[in-house]
Image (cartoon, rainbow, N blue to C red; front, side, top):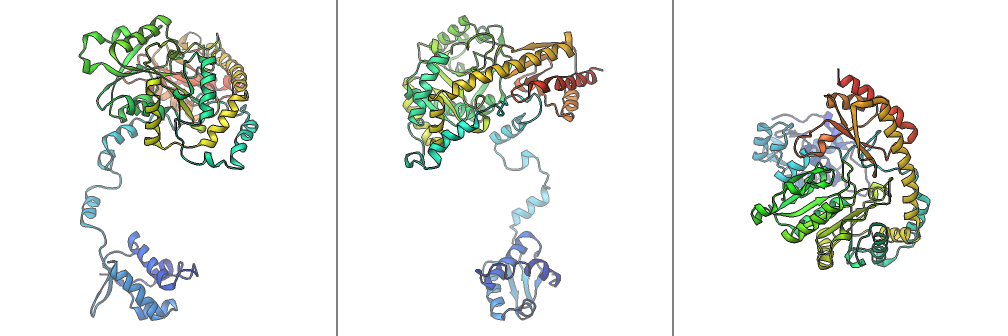
Length: 499
């Protein structure tokens, strides 16, 4: 047992004493000692001053200190031994002491109590936190976004709040927005739908999660493209689905590689994820023949096609390709879209178009699982679309992004000549590059990162081993006049990594 250190009075008690006149001195003394004990500043066995001594030191009445001590004693923080004094008790449970002794603070994920699902999530984080730097994929240009118009749309519903827009969302989202989206998608993407089939979500990840929870059971097979955006596999594995991959060729998913007819029914996929209009990250488009085959297989083997229409608004060679959903006569396709790339990522607003037979169930499932809201924001988005600002912004950004892509292609050709392959140049906000020669990707990435050029390793998009070293280069967040300098740094890193 140790005696009370008078210096601790000035460090632990006096600073908080009389700090708030609304709180009694008795309670302030109690709180000061409680916090000191819980923080470990006053350890087990530490002797406290007598009530008389502490009252003199603090300049308060003895009864005030006595009442504070009584409360600390009643709650088990201190104990009084007759003839010996008042001491801090051992408030740490035995199991806590044993764990602390057995495992230092640097315990890894296996020892910190996370679920198996959580460990997979944490260990599979690749680049979601990387939001700045030249060539970060998935970043859109916000400098050219008409925030003054967007703010005007929002002000209509936030300056004088509408009571109908302040509660939870029901029915799949704000009805006028669902109407506006149904009309827009029919014209721009050949999507066949009514407003009732449109479900508003908070991001594509939530859309994927909702599809998994509503359409598949634990251990069901979910098929994804290889390569593919890693979040799809991550979310579906978190939903306890068995994720398997299917490779690509120039026509899209290699459906001939999956022996549907030769496997047991239990191994048939329940979900098949695809980005047919602009494959992410390789950039190809699924052929019409392959699209029709996929729909026919979905009908025959009773699986759902999850069509992510990634970056479909930004196509530079022709008009955007019609959606896969528009070809579906069997109601097996769920169409996913988002405003993140056209507007800005932090908006967190996406949508699904589900078959009529699923519309009511998806709407109910969304309400029960996620309690959606943001109705005033959805109302502003509805006006932004119906008044023509959305389509106008898409047309403007299509020209800006096309110019950046041309400059990126030119710079890559100039600095890398025949040592690099480029794919994905017809649409979207990224190009995928692959090197013809062996290269130390880790070394090149590290060098470029030190120079402010962020490079996303192509291998991160594969569930298995990447067949070739390369990068996914986003150009949405870099100005045209900055592309040349960034590619030059990339070329310097390549030279360093191939020595």
